[in-house]
Amino acid sequence: MADTIANRIARDPQGRITAATAIGMNALKPIMHFQVSMLRMWADTIERFAGNYEKGLEETATAVEEQSGKERAAQ
Image (cartoon, rainbow, N blue to C red; front, side, top):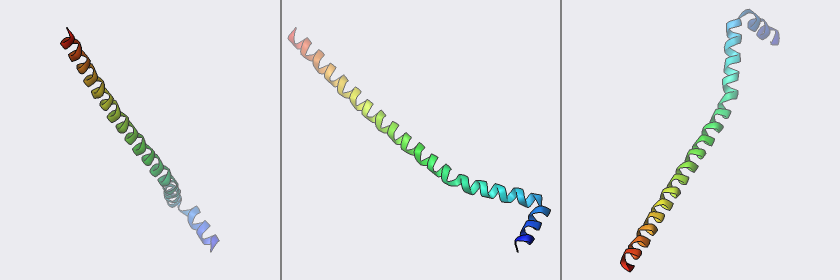
């Protein structure tokens, strides 16, 4: 049985290349899924940081406006 498989592989180099490519792609699939999940997590973190940054800017702008309003009222 193993001899017939070995003979077939030796006779058919294109099949050998196809089999090696399929094995490589199957090995690569979980790695790619992991990388995609890491990129999604990274993007979510950046979006959360951007939201917090905007919120901080709005709070700072509001505080500055209130402070300048108080200074104008005091004059």
